[in-house]
Figure 1 (tube, rainbow, N blue to C red):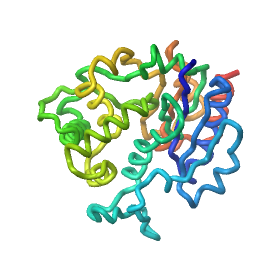
Figure 2 (cartoon, rainbow, N blue to C red; figure 1 turned 60 degrees about the horizontal axis):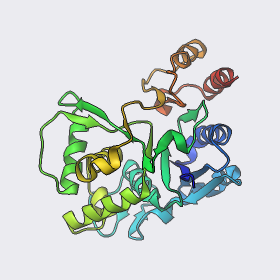
Figure 3 (cartoon, one colour; figure 1 turned 135 degrees about the vertical axis):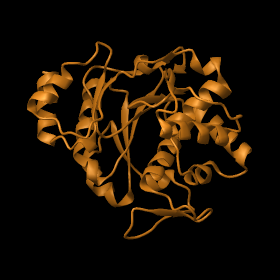
Amino acid sequence: MADRLAVVTPSFAGDFELSRDLNASVLAYAPPDVHHHLIVPRRDLELFGSLSGPRTHVLDETDFLPRSVRHLPGTKYSLNLRRPFPPLRGWIIQQIVKLASGAVDADTLLLVDSDISFCRPFGPDTFVRDGVARFYRKPNEIDDRLPRHVLWHKAAREMLGLPAAPPPYHDYVSSILAWDPAILTEMFARIEKTTGSPWPTVVGSQLHFSEWTLYGVFVDEVLGARATSFASDDALCHTYWDDTPLDDQTVRDFLGKLSPTDVAVMISAKSRTPLETRRAALKEFNA
């Protein structure tokens, strides 16, 4: 029996049009048994409901958060009643939701942000081999030149009860990543045993945190060989991270540099590239 792959995207109203395009690309390039799960705040359920279909499921973000989490009206913050300080910022809420997405019914999760679009066929065989989820790891990429990444590694090691270690560290951050829900369950148990607190409370207390780094450190340093047999340093996604908006020509130049293995492109929403410019170029590329 083939591994069941599910695409998971936490999103919100501000990224609705990008999410619409991503969803269309999932339906176009993934096999019929691959479903797309969009996890959004309750206030955005009606908006995203227009995307619902046989392979597209719009889910309430609240169902992926502890009951102790309460949104603070009129702000971008939430509060975890178990640990009120610091307040939960939007990016931490999104990371908790991503981690909690292991509750989605699938053998492998493919975490994909809204500003990504698939441009080539993909499926379970792309991200699972012999029952092992594809593990993105770029060895020894992180050192003091990337201070935030160093802090993410230190936080992950503390949460997992691992001894401190100096850089360099491996880089586990990518635009699309495969996660094994069974590994998430093991990781949560490790965090709770180490800290004595529920894992969402531990994550919510972090001032510097990366869900990708936490998962990567756990796989590499706690699980080891049984979870790393399908490791790769190929991100499978061509990315544009700059703040400068792309125009008709520069977006075509960008798409012209896809590698043969890339199945998706990411044009950062923070680049403020006009939606129609992006759509026209992707339509031309896909044609």
